[in-house]
Image 1 (cartoon, rainbow, N blue to C red):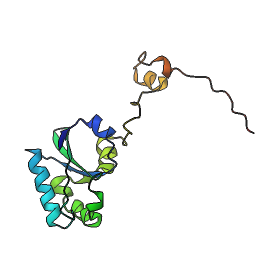
Image 2: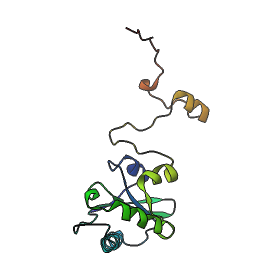
Image 3: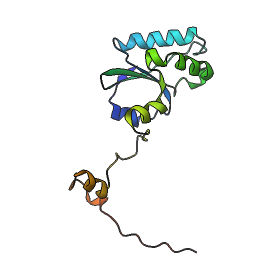
Length: 148
């Protein structure tokens, strides 16, 4: 399955890790087939397994593809994949999802059920975004906790 997502959706994916390739123009299905074939020939994908699902997203002017490890982890030779990734850093922009999120998007992954980030009143005042908070964001008085 090939799923086109936004970077906001990428941040919220339940996927914890994967291989991100950057600058993947053309047909995503050809990329999926080609990478599965290359990784199989290199002995990285084992037991005839492939990446059945990929996520395609745009960032800047690049089309990028995430090959998630969730369904294929037990069938990957991670040592060989790590070497392959380093060998293809320059030509494919190969990086781990856990590196891509903070280094390219400036964020860490967010659990799918977490509420979206809402700036504090102090942050809103500092950036001039006043008046956009809800009642649930209003400051609450803290009551001192009693130690037992």
